[in-house]
Image 1 (cartoon, rainbow, N blue to C red):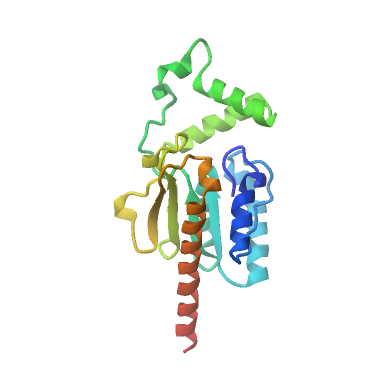
Image 2 (spheres, rainbow, N blue to C red):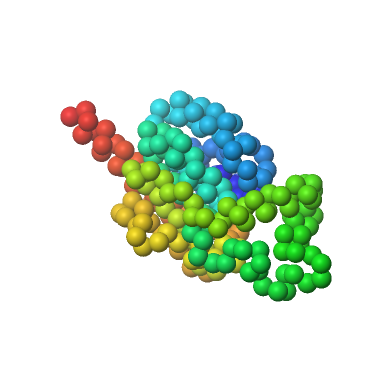
Length: 228
């Protein structure tokens, strides 16, 4: 699932790389991500159930940035019968850095424009979406980011991939706290990688492939035990 304001086009390299490794990746086919999960939810579930029926096994959820938080929410709706694991890429998981708009550094408040105004204008110039709608979406997301992302059910594996020099989602916000870490719940840091660079990094692909392979082995080991 793509990040805020992004589309399936932003995932081209990830899709290509995973397909080259022999996996069968799917994009979410929901257009641009405006961040409002509940509006995407019915169609997302429809797409997901179609994939699950086609392959008849639990599916991996992979989300970049805001898409990662959506993947975590989806895992709590579907559970381990449908989701084998989750990988988030540069996703804001834990609100360790300042999240209040009043705490944004002063240079972003020059003149009469607020942080939301400036960010909305920047996004508007790139995607051509309605300015007021973008401002509403940004404000909603900023409020959401003041709370931790929902963690997946305990029996679903989870890897958080973090950019070492991510200037959009600070490292401390994408890191899972120590008390949540398990053999199947991990942080993986891509040193020297930016937020955008995470989606183009070979190291990101390696971490995703390792996560999927571990889930694959666990899934078939478990089924062999049940059939023995």
